[in-house]
Image (cartoon, rainbow, N blue to C red; front, side, top):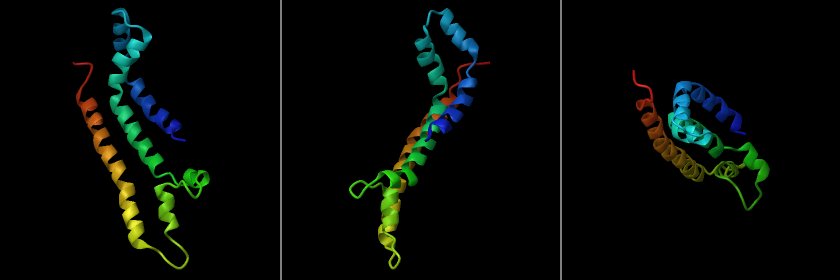
Length: 128
């Protein structure tokens, strides 16, 4: 479900890679895979990090697909939060505790991935 979003984000980063860098790598004897892995991939690292952050956050908080595919033994955290609410009782303590547990992994992942974004933005391939 996140694939169209990732393609849309990465397309703009891949288009910005200058063709002259790819051509220079081919002149130096690099094959297609070497051009991709040694030239293009390092330049689109910030785009990969941004796509990873957004995709992880969307997938982590997925409710509709998880509620359709889960059963009694396998539930995700968003479904557990909703199951703590009933018509007569709302268990606020359990909801707030599971909400904090739900929020911690995306925050940690965003902190680690944002370093890649900053590193990629500050390191340029073309000086001039």
